[in-house]
Image (cartoon, rainbow, N blue to C red; front, side, top):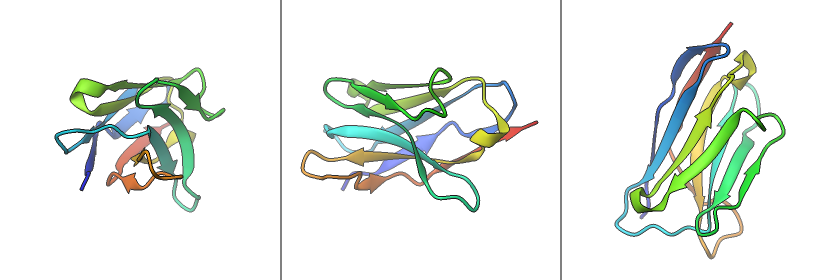
Length: 119
């Protein structure tokens, strides 16, 4: 059973940066894709961006394009989310998720990490 462990959240001032990490706790890990999602209080969960594990194809939500960068280190079974120019509207719980090769959606989720951006 794959477990995803996120880290790197915290409190930052507007304009600052944070880097989130998400590591899979299995010996071998080869999903179809990994994704970052976020959920702000009272809001539905939304996609931040995704990356395919093999080819490294990346998608970003319009709201984070040019500010956030997704990357992965296959050898470390880790996906990263570098967040720059953070704004208060980026405040949310951030989740990483994995989509297996046989799934049509993201089917394994991390526990989430809080990101708070102050004015």
